[in-house]
Image 1 (tube, helix red, strand yellow):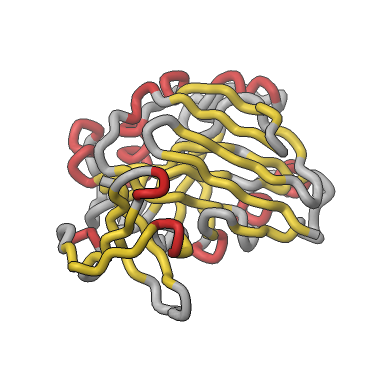
Image 2: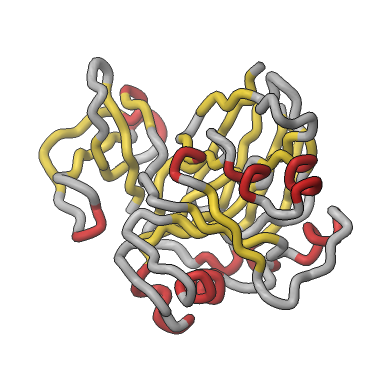
Length: 257
């Protein structure tokens, strides 16, 4: 299932929906409430082309793992960590598909990082790796926008990765997906920059979620980011970044002045 969150023309109220069909025939079937306690369909159907897609969930927090791909660690001159590096993005970092994100005034070196995002489906804590599948709602696409100069100069990553708009998510949550070997490609203005696979993650989805859950309770709608493959780089004002993950879809973001 493809679970989306959206608004329709003339309405400021968001709804959850089920995306059915493809291309010009795609529609969104409105759901009765959030999907975390079960998918309850209504009879309301709207062509996908006529809705505005929002970030597919409203997380209380985004928990991210850094340097989870060896080649990405190497390209930035870093060692592969012996234990996972974990950092947080606040809820105010989250924006949806086709968002316009202003180039932050604090930085002169804004980077993109395409990532697989795990969406938590039920409240959990201290989850064993073998039980992670039971707490996951599904998967979406993320772009971990990073003020690289701020990240490096401050030594910890809260401001460098937690600024407003730094976590585009979308276009929807795919619930029926094997995340173990998905193609992940990022382009900037149509030029291919990242061409990786989740098979190269140092720690797989189950290990990532389990590690995070040992320290904090994860709530329905929370998001765990699993790291980025090699190929990250700088962005300029006016750039458009697209991140595509096989089996999920494409997330586009434009950097504005």
